[in-house]
Length: 79
Image (cartoon, rainbow, N blue to C red; front, top):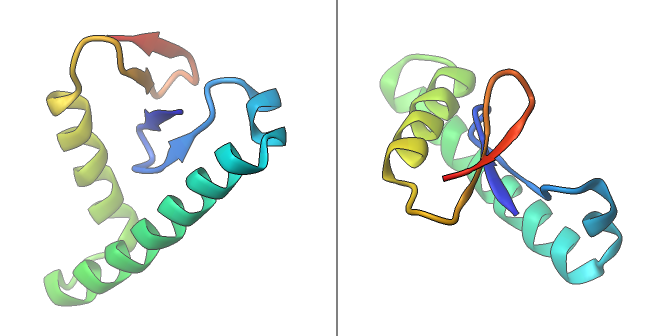
């Protein structure tokens, strides 16, 4: 599982989503994030997409060695 530039989590390989534990974690976390992004967007008078992008930038800058990051070009890189 890794962070994307869209502010969401994804499995680094599509086949990993076949594992119910992996898909459950990814889907639950992304649902929580969507709710948070909507709430923050209303408070900040902006869009959820802007909030998600800010969160993604923060997560990328705080990522530690060994974490997977999916860049804007769609490619995964291990930090």
